[in-house]
Image (cartoon, rainbow, N blue to C red; front, side, top):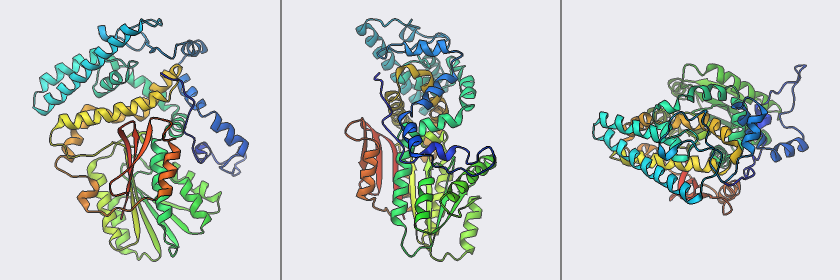
Length: 466
């Protein structure tokens, strides 16, 4: 695997938003550090990944050993992989002959891929016992430190070989902030979705609007909104951000995000209002209030890798239906980001399963491509926090059942596309360094959608509607 320097740099310093805005005396600190500090941080973006790597190492000797590993060979760890088959047995840190290694890997990957397809067919045809037998054999072939398909296969099922997962998760969660910064800044998935949506929102605001109201389906850490806050402050308009309450246990996280966003806004002289509402409360509020000179934005980002979680299809549909109802009588826009690739109405589960498998295989490959080989433990921690939650055979089957017979979110509720600008497209192409990396940007048929692709596989879709 090639060792690469980070190719994606944020257009604004993410670390300054997540850092505390107060010094030791309780005084406000400007969120944006000095230009010299920002340049230093951009030049050392991989430091975050080095930190992630060290979470799983007990001493400096382990780090040194990893750095001595050849970038052309896989790293196999006997302390992690407890059992394995002939195709993925423990190999000491001695590179075997290339031809033998390649043949072993091809044989292992082909066998796993065929078994995964057979498992999906067994589930679809109602043969649970056969599915369990296939699953057991897949787990024997897979390894948490093997090639992409082996790691995917291991995470699809609850395998005995994956028994260290809980430990890795707990260790990674202890350093979530560092991991989030590294993941968001180094990889383009989240920033592509956020920047595309934000540019479209700012380009769509009419001059006569005095207030902008953003209704966010899944606010998370609030990482999407600092650039919008800064832009709104410059054009001297008011801003309200409403977070939809989807879980009962998200109150503490919302309060932290609200505090960070409001403090960030105050550094630009903007009196931002951040509130939280259930969807039913949102409908009642909009029905009772008279919206004068207010531009409404309904923003939905679903299953983007940095979010580390999925949402129910029914929740997304309810949100979009509310948005359609509200925009029928008010001026506004819907921005929709989807990190699960292409949503299709597959009539059979194996077809849906294979498309999901191809999507997450491409995601794993794109992450691996951007990691130096000596940071394999760091990559594992990143995968644990931000990718593993999406890779589960049972949840894939549930999603297939939810979406079966449906044509797609936007078509189901009859939305009209908003054409995305050429300037927006050029910004996204520059973001992913198109032409010089395996990443590319594709334009949707109606020109209201941009698609981030890894080679030929869609990773993230972003569209605008009204």
